Length: 126
Image (cartoon, rainbow, N blue to C red; front, side, top):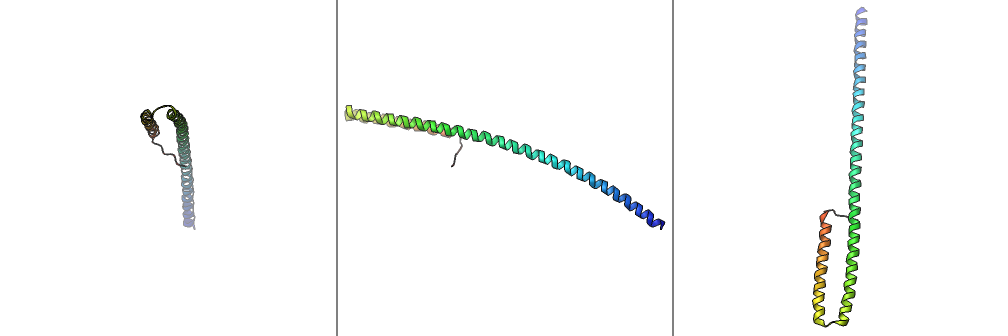
């Protein structure tokens, strides 16, 4: 009976040691999980900030596009008005020359607008 008591005592000691090991492993796991959660939160915050910056860039580009569109519309209407005035008062040869100059100016304006759009290399899709 003495041997069985000794065996039981040894097993109880081993059980207590294993319980301590389990508690230590749980503590380590808990600390690693909290570190992992902290890293996830930092990454999420960084992504949010980057998305916010990109959204602002997109909004800025949209406002520039609207501004350029208004400028082009204004110039087009002014040119059409001037074209109508020229038809009333000038001979046809002079009209043709001025129309060609207008078309060149229009092409240059469109070229400048397309270059401005190409500078940021961002495609906006609705």
